[in-house]
Length: 99
Image 1 (cartoon, rainbow, N blue to C red):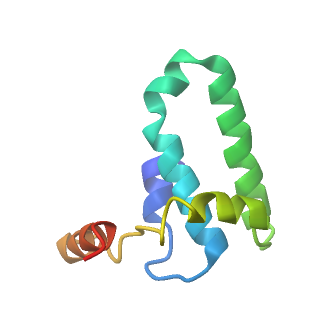
Image 2 (cartoon, helix red, strand yellow):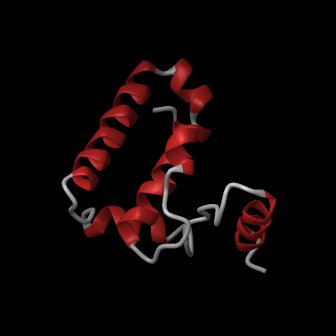
Image 3 (spheres, rainbow, N blue to C red):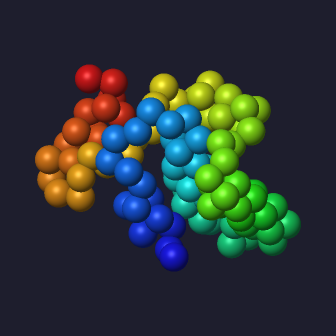
């Protein structure tokens, strides 16, 4: 599955900290596309990390608290789109701006 498809597959509303941390990990993964192309070691480490997160989530377990906390210090909540239409985009955009 492509990262964009995975991001769109997240639940519209959640308070689950593991889901929010996983969402942020995928956003970070997508944002590092250029660095991943230039640095093979970084790409491999990031791929392993995403695979580790997906393994834990696939088993229905919560992510380790240290991983959750590593994302909470940067993001108040996940900017998961409420829906795939324009309204959902606008709600996510305003939430991103903290309005």
